[in-house]
Image (cartoon, one colour):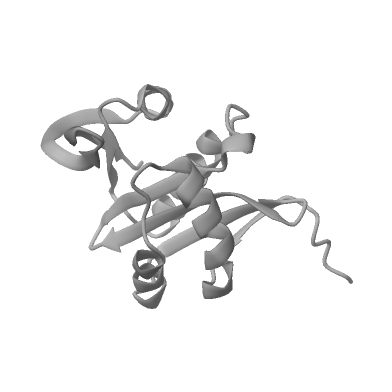
Length: 153
């Protein structure tokens, strides 16, 4: 059977994906991750997942498992694929994978100004558990991060 490379699917991120990922990352974020950060995550076996449609990376996530906790470190949907429910699909997949790997909770930080992401996480049952002051770089200094958590059942 021949694999349909144009079917939409999830798969693990590979080092050979990084140039395409960096293009998305640099457009999506004012302060993007570097290729070195992605390389370090891959070298340390973090849970790095892509969503590909029509042979093109549409979204990716990077998470780290620590004991029984999943830490979502990066979630990005390419700009031209946003507002189509893909962010929700990515987080739901992460939640299912975390559950399968016996993680008890998922934690993440989100910019306090990122209303769309906060709304998404709220719809998925995440709760605000803390605040990290001056966590993210910003144009005029630093920006706070909300710390969110979701219990896996």
